[in-house]
Length: 415
Image (tube, rainbow, N blue to C red):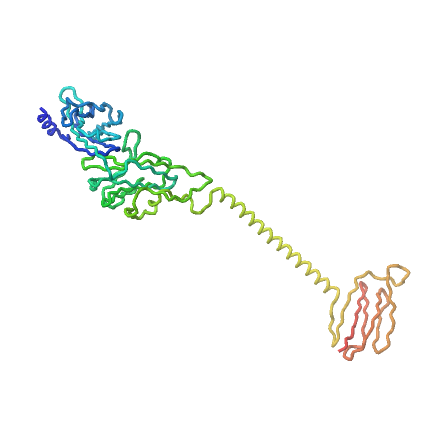
């Protein structure tokens, strides 16, 4: 009867009679089961055979069953998603142990005949090469490096990193298919070194939204996924007034297997330094006002210096003009004459008219020099002494003016 039913399954297009899946202790698996289009409205279930080598439907104990479509349904360690558009339902098993090894069935529940199914042989082993769990931390805005080892038997398989969301182990997936080639630009970039059996992933410019559970795994050619290493990432916010010191933390990747790429500068640090300038926003806000105040003081000092210089220039000019107004030098032949303009108010001719007038007696000096007074009205008087000099003129005239009187003092200098 089993042989006949297996033959019937092989006659149904798109249905696989038996598949093999390898899982790893502490990890998980995703198993994809195809079914015929005519069963898309039927309930789907996943069960385990009671006997190790028995796949007969009558000896199968249900683990999860649902009529829901396009929606994840969870039951303990198992989840099921029925994608009617792709005619595939997916089963996820979490927290695997070696006891989970055995035979399972993916089946469609129909009432009028024997349920069609696909046999699944699950083998759960312990991977001594690989870590079960890794915890990483980073500051917001930095980068995170993920490094996961995998068994050599999966060297040729596709590698991936999945982000878990609820019971879905692979809500967001990034995969790499080539050896020693970075994956296309995405939120997570991957690099597969098959000689070292090392999968490397980099997440740049992390935020709080990157704090989550991730899984490193491999995908078989039949589309089944095996989750090997769990990666827990924690992202912390940067305080506004403090700086993080440079971090020496790094993921558990060996230096010999570190890949090189054009964007390796953003992949190497686990936690990027927050600020290389050493200034906080608060410190910068204090520096700007200080610079402005200093600049204002400099401008004020220059302005005061300019005004002081200008004032000094005016005082010096006035003094020069005053001196020039009081004394005018008149050159004679071999002699120096100084013309003095009297700015005093006129003196009365009669001394008794005003007590403020000052008179000097003019004495006639002996010698050849003469003093000629052209008029006696409104004059100031002074004593004039002469010393004979051969090349100077013998007479000096005092001139009278209606507004003021002019005197000429003649000094004879000995040669």
